Length: 506
Image (cartoon, rainbow, N blue to C red; front, side):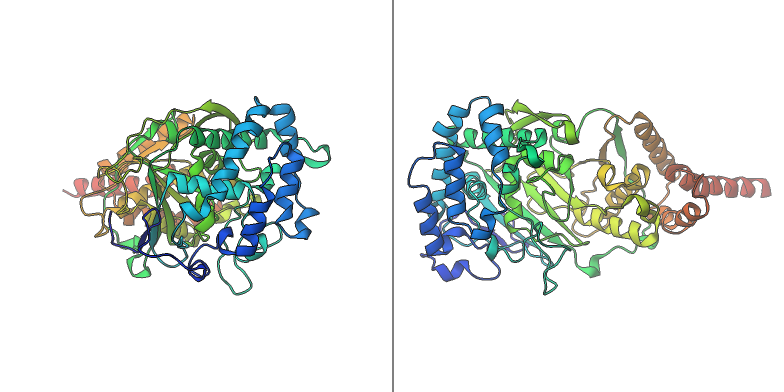
């Protein structure tokens, strides 16, 4: 496997027995089995069969701090299993005992430290699918000590950093999924869909142990490699804009974009049910990234390689529903990883009052840098190169981004990525799913065709986008032109006028 950046294969057997101290280093995940006293309490809590949700709640709270007994709520899980689950007996007789066995096998399955994918450095780790199942089983049982997770985001913490200015990690325990909906105590429909997907995942891996590997590659782009956008004399790459289809179903053999939150997985363990959260439920193994991935900075991305898809789905947002089992036929590469490459890049969020600010130069440059960082090729990719990038309305929807602006930003970033030495001849092109927006698909296709016909460069488009368009938005708040039209009017039409004047001068 490539070794250009620090890479740890956690699935490999260590050369010697590890001491507990190895687990407690600041650069490694703190696992529940590293605290002998806590691990003894966890094992004791599940020494007797779990025959009801009341038994499950008592067991989980027995090894968590007393303050959580007053806050953690299992009423949603109780309602789900008693009223909504298709086969509650199967959950208690097979799935839940299997989750417990998986969780308690942690010392046998994880025999070397799991490095944290920390900010400001590129690094990668590889885990087996069964190691991930074990880690997620512990997340389901809430065995990761909340009080030890001083650098994890939670409802009790605000902002992006801890008291020392250190970026936070996402939460990892599954407890929020167990809560009831308000005073009713009923399981919210979105939570029910997620629980169906998660129980199906565990049911699947318990029946047939998967044998594959997954690699997680965090990239931090060195400031010396930041593009000088205004001077990039590079022509625009092609785009295949599709009004129908979606990334996960129609992006086979492509790098598939995860419209990420800076805290990887976003609201997957809570009420969120948009693009990233849905992907993390149907490709359930992705949830493990929350255990070891520090929040992403502006010049960072996360490549997630080899995950298996376990579920189908319908709906989006509040209409999201679990759609049944999915038979993943994607083949494995030579290292035993599925040839599924998912790229997480997080866009900026703009509140309703701040929407016009997305057109400011500082904002567009931030988004350009983020997309460019992600679009550079990962040395760990299982896909043949050059690989297409399957994307869409990144940073739009819940993040309130302008679809035309975000499509142009991705277009420029993909074009610029081929100029980087790491890319060589592997220039990416975009397959852009507009999710039913026929007008956007048609407009983007025409826009790119005109730019390519006139051999317009990245630097030329950037000059219009980063300066003139922001001024236009400020001056024409109520009647602004769309991004495509403004760029074409101010760039292509001017070029045609200059050509016409030159012809007339002859």
